Length: 596
Image (cartoon, rainbow, N blue to C red; front, side, top):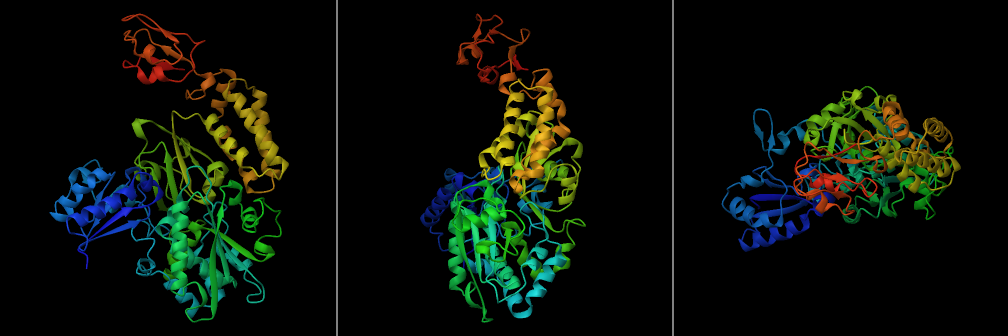
């Protein structure tokens, strides 16, 4: 019997910060102090607060240590685990107006959340099926197979109001219902989209790394509901930790008889195999994903017929993403009304977001649908660094749009985001401040889309390339007002004529920035100026003669020798030589250099 348990985040973010080395060092120090039989070490998935990682939580004291390094381990073991004295300098502290909060669960970051899909992440050992079972794991599958008919399962999912968390928001129960005919007479498949290619998105990866069994259990439930005996998880090979933990989970589930033949002695057969993707963004589209599983180049197919009728290997198939499946067992156990009681009228339950960009609490959050953007950014996210002003938030990645400051109080749900020109997407949420150029942001996402287009249809293959070229002209100060009109015209044409969701949504970042930040486009075109000072070709660095002290530091650090001046005299910049690297701005000690 252990007297203490040390949970160390083993997700990708903390792993890159050295959590593997921390765990190894922790075990060595415990052995050195003869505590290996008294203190257990558990490698978990992501705790969510990635900005403070690597995170370590000591139970039963519930003390959370943040930004732990290998060099801290000896002190933690000797002081806390051996002598019972908390290492105050490493404790995570959230400073509020009137107090300090040290318990993770009591911080604003966690208190505003409702964790369903993420409920086990950071809590259990993802490589232990026993720990998953200890948190009611596979109980939902057992209940479904022994107490419910397939149609009853589908009805529960329908009544819950669960919509697909992969982007489009299609009702999950309806998708299952479409594929449920001819059970037992036709080969069917259950697929999981774990390809997650949006820049800045890591929601699905974190679920797979922190709670892989929940996806396996949900897929087996889906298989029972529609009459399928085989499932495939399509996961990108760039997620090595997720892939390894999925392989472990599948092997454990087979060993326990929870995958394979005659599950729970009910005669129901269901197994799952992995298929690794090579990182093609287009394979997030369901028909392209299925084409890739079949061993072909990942290209979308025309719809109809839809996958529920003719999908993988031309058989009826359902496809949901990781987060969608992660909700299924809890809905079965707690009931449809429980899930439907959260969220908004048309968007039930919770949504997981990956917070990134200009925000203090970079990380993973799960909030009830209808939570305002202000709450997510200012309270959960801890606001914007360095006192900067919020400018916009990009949701939905390359398929989404920008939410401007005027909609800062918008309740986040599927319909509200679509109404203002954005979309939920899979859950990436990139925050931008006053230093971001919205034309450059649109160009960034278009460049990504151009690179990721499969090239099958002309509107996407050629149209997005032409849009990118226009944006490139504008950011170089070479654009015209006619270019802005042409950009908008192209955007609507591509939306209406592209074959799949990638092309149909590719223009969204451009359309939303044109809608809310057209003045920035006009400034680039008419004034040859980037208001945010981002677009390099339009930048000019200058020296304020009233502030320059002639210290020569800027000249000494200029790689182009573009700055001249004598000691204690005002310096000047030769704009013909200046390469606009910003080294002078970074090195000026007197705030004398500015860009415009």
